[in-house]
Length: 316
Figure 1 (spheres, rainbow, N blue to C red):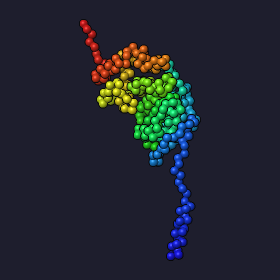
Figure 2: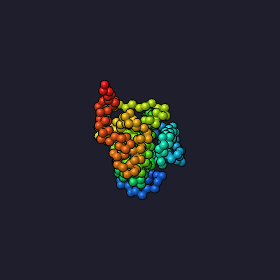
Figure 3: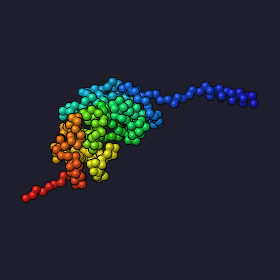
Figure 4: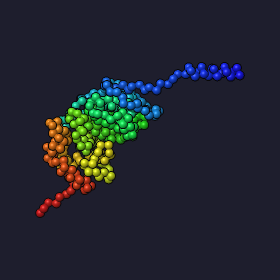
């Protein structure tokens, strides 16, 4: 009995000396000072064991022209190079067409926890009214590989631990980076996120898809042909976050190019006209010489004809 009591006292003493595990999560360092107060505590995903080799990307920002690429976390071997490559090509292409990007920072992350914190703080300081951290975190985790453009910044999530970036074809990586840089350029031209929100989703995403598709062809990739069989929405019904907006908004610019000589410059000229105090509808008319309403009817006819121009037989 005396031995049992001695043993129990030893166990109690041992447990009282065990180290306690802190539940606090260290703040993720960012390149900008944040004055925001977190609205919620994020619940990190379970830690996964990487199967790929992690390598440190350049520790200092990579700068060319007015575009800066910043790697916030280690990447898989080879990822750093192609992200830098396509960002640089996009910056050069914008200068060629006479629309410099303005200052754009491409921020690359491997985990949704890190990109959520950074993107929230950046958007708040840029006056872009970010969603709550819970919503932002949910979007990053649900969509896997993703990119997002906001004023002066692009956020790129490679999801390294799930190897998502490597599952994406090189042509799609190039297009994704260019799409988001274009969206950042749109906001830079307009001067604020609020102005950008005055543009219909089909136009804002259409410009980004149009530039991405045409730029990557300049770089030797083939023109992309998306499946349109399930995408039959009217122009006014195209909404951001839905898959068909990417397919159909690009077709919007295919139609503009065929009927209204819709070149690169015209697509961004609409935004330039808006900086003069014009509404989107007025700016669109002044550039393309057709009203948004009339063009919407034309797009409906184009859509119902299988996205082919309706041949008009000349009257004898």
